[in-house]
Image 1 (cartoon, one colour):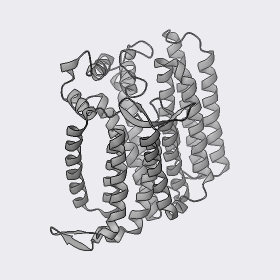
Image 2: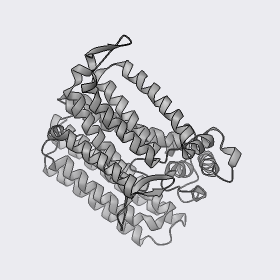
Image 3: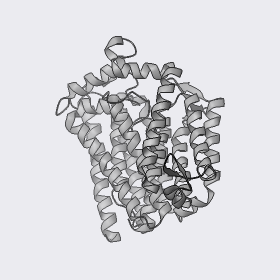
Image 4: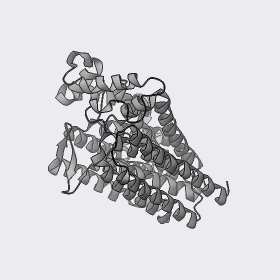
Length: 421
């Protein structure tokens, strides 16, 4: 695909996205969900300028990066803004600022970073900084929703685990690429399975184990699940050995069982998942209201601004998918899932077309993070999995999540541009 066609495709998609944002605001006003459109329209104009400016910068840099992943993420961000305006209008200004900051960092990485491959050279520095961030949360963090996973910086709160998951993938990509043959062939036999010696697998296990221990102390088990899933996926991508997957799943099952008996927080979430009706007016209220909301949406939904999603506690963060499903119906919910599937597909396509092992592992690992997080939160709100408290990427309210996801997107775009993927 030529440079001109790539950027024209992107421009056409952004025209649709900006039009959708305007129609969303108009729908909320028509439904009397918002009383004054001046602020929302001003914010919409700022968002439009931000997206168009990012597109122009990519065009000026003659970027040959994938023309679909940025518009797909932008569409989800716009859906998020519309839903936050619907659910918590007082937070929409803050979310808009975070979105503009995220896009600015995205452009800095996508078009300003000369070559993503230099990241491979400083893997131990990254992981040290990442673990330091997690440790600082243990020592100085504040508890929100039962998890001690936030740093209060005065004007805003920051969730270090959102950034650490990207650092983890960068470290794993570099380390596994360097030691790929050793991990694939092994150096010694353990119960008939060829495994690397401790000197090779040790740093990996120490880093992974320390991260999970810190996250367990934070009680941020949703992030721990995402970390573990990404770790297993990248080991498999690098080696192609199912033995790592099976042993990892066994370790996870043992760890999950221990967490259940050790932490009341985990017991509550598992018990709610198994039968929320036992405490319908207490701890089960949130998930039950989510199921009612999704069910009442039917095929076409109640219409934007015409449902009752505010009956769900913390709806703008953990349960924004339920609110969207109620007001746009099964069709809207499936459409949103399709957008995620397309973004994940493009991410793995970038990984397959990367011209080097590090780029392949990095793109695949970042895409896996996005896929696991989406699966965990959507599965949680429909009661397929226990609730974990993670956010829906690009859609849920939250500055840490939004900015970190645009950092992830910027790295994918940079890999794509360097390899013409």
